[in-house]
Image 1: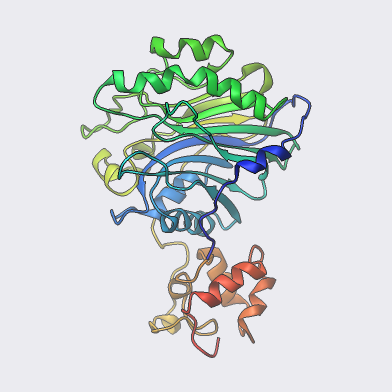
Image 2 (image 1 turned 135 degrees about the vertical axis):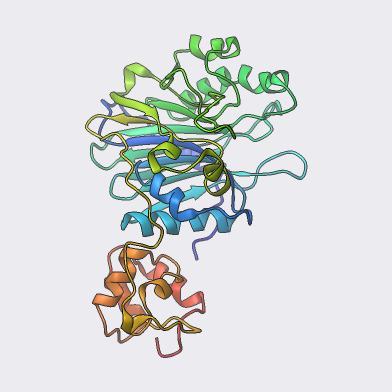
Length: 363
């Protein structure tokens, strides 16, 4: 199983100076996924159905290693493609702590260097932001992303110290990733038009997405009361061709309340660069992609590569709907190690399958 990735400040030494790129051809989103990893009935299939519309996703409120890996597996299962991810350690004051995460489609984006949780010597941030540098596989251009979840507190006054400190953090990103376009994304718990953001805007950052409505889901149907989620960027360095807020409840035909219960009380905010398409959600039908046949209806106490149906195969790490069907079509399998012939199943991922102890002994 992919382990909870620890981020090292020493990685800063490997940051390279690069020329300012003319950016293009990937989509980038930020999404507060509300307590991902708690036992709260989250529908990871639906989350992944939405998240797969983007090439790169910054996530807030990851609560456990298991939650991060569940999202990773769901993304691969829904998309039929390989994804990678990194998460911070759990960060916060007191008993409440959460992690930041980056998830990316491996055919579109790759991690470059510089993964670090900000060293907050002034102790301003309740949850110090996570940043790293990535590269578009389509164009070869690099970009640096800072991911933050500002403290909500009891009132707006509790949020202002962190908002006021964003200008310094923005300049810190420029020092750590010199010559690389910056993005500062996340849940800021404050409308980007609030005067507290003025110092950040004065330093050259621009709020990329605003359409007059909010990014949080009210319990009242159709209402999005608060515009808390933002993407700040350097406009001259990026080729933003479209942007928006993916209000998925109306597109998927579910109620605000249902979305809050099984997905999140926030919606994704996104930008598309160059020729990257805007997201277009299709109807979501859980488990409908690979119907079980009459010959494979049996349920086994263990997973058999040569007998189990697609639903049972899906219990294995890294095996989503597409890979389950590939396993079925590739039968018979002489050994588990032979699964490395399937795209995206490396030796380490096959070892994860073996170590899950879910396989029948003859597998």
